[in-house]
Image 1 (cartoon, helix red, strand yellow):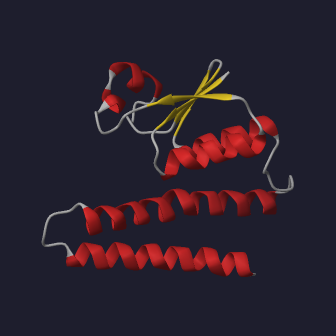
Image 2: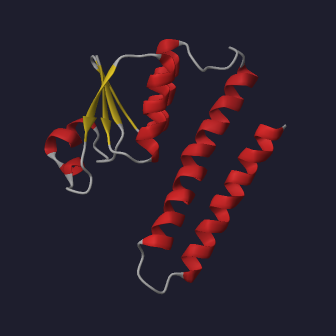
Length: 144
């Protein structure tokens, strides 16, 4: 059975949603990042980057939420575009946009707004602007 190493945050949630939508049986394996469990030797053997999510599927181990989504899509044949170079290029472009844009900029916006010490106005403004810009691109794409 698939094991999803999980902490309740946005990236693991993307994977859990995929598993639910695909109807795949899986076991949640909680990783308490507030206690630093992601830095344990056992977890770092699964994900050397010490971040959630990570997924173990038999002899396949996958880490990084976007890599996991692509792995599961290819494994199940679900939620994939038409098998053409143009459709695959579009899917990969938007998947990487989420990986390198939405996720990091939203995460930094939240971090600087709620957790960083003062002074932080520059960082809050920069990351909030970029997060909003990225979401605007998503809204425009979905409206097209």
